[in-house]
Length: 81
Image (cartoon, rainbow, N blue to C red; front, side, top):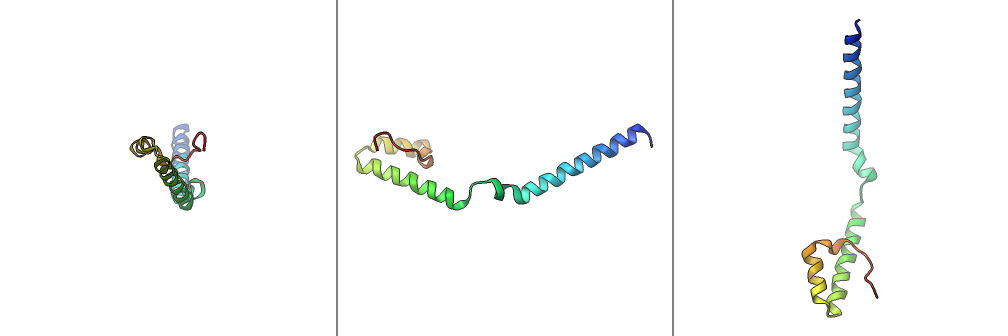
């Protein structure tokens, strides 16, 4: 075999390995490393509770701003409670 043929075989094997890894990650990677559904739901519920607390405190503009920004599910503690 010539050097060129060896290079083609090596490239083919490398491409095959990359495709196998991509398929494995497609099947298992997201489930192993991604956010679980129950955590997503809990975060959204906490964000909704934060909006309700803002509304109950009369802070309607802040609650509206959260809704419009889409950041309502990015739960962070409010300053001063």
